[in-house]
Length: 329
Image (cartoon, rainbow, N blue to C red; front, top):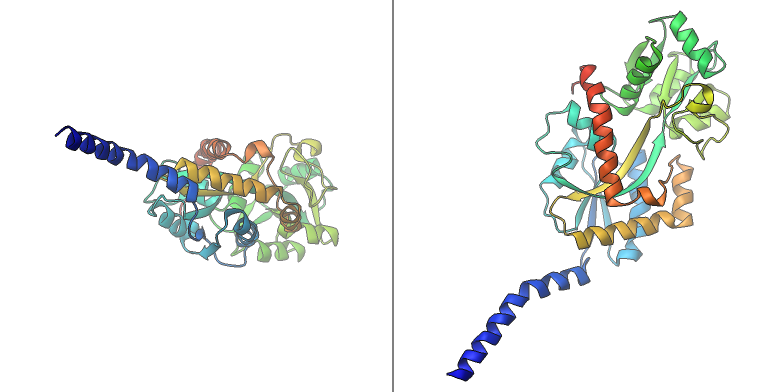
């Protein structure tokens, strides 16, 4: 009887320990199969290129294939919604952005919560906007541009990439901060809008380096300032808004990786380490710089820093979006 009882207690203790052993084993073996990063926009755009550059670099670090899957629709909210419903096992991630993980919460009636239903992993890139104008714009600097707009209310037009887009919100904030008025014209993309600035069909555009730099170098448009507190590596000759006379008028698009909320902390830590290592690779850094992407400093690449950034952006921009009455069309 004593032997049977000892055997029973030994087996019971082993059974109790199994879940802990299982958790350790999972942490040690993760990842044991391919990881999918959902990009909630069509292939070929800036976010798609960034995601694929990083996915390629992550494969040897994680020892598994990293697959990029494009899931389009509703300004990215369909792809993000899929991740909100996915298993929190570390094998399905999403490349989020200023639009999908901030603005959409104020523009769309979402079926998920952008903060509570996701786990931040890493901020991977950002793109400050540039304040640009047609070549024939009379103003030669940013202060002169603001003065011209004030002297000519409602006569100028600015191109954007659609209702509720970062370029749209940035243009509205620019008007508010400078006490100016001009028409905001939606386009299907930054490229077509910028071509109309080059052609002189519209007057202004607040846009990223990817659309701006080539035209600035060729002398086809004017660039007054970058909306950041430091100059852009893609166009170091363009002053910051602080230097140009509108201090603090900052605006940057950003891209960051998120997972479903229930993803284990061990998996998040391993994924974050892999992304940080990828962003430190000189080849990756150069490839991102070539498409106008800025890499955040190391202290901004943590999950905690990304969560704080997202919350700060929501607190800053949701009131502005809602006050402007911006809704999904």
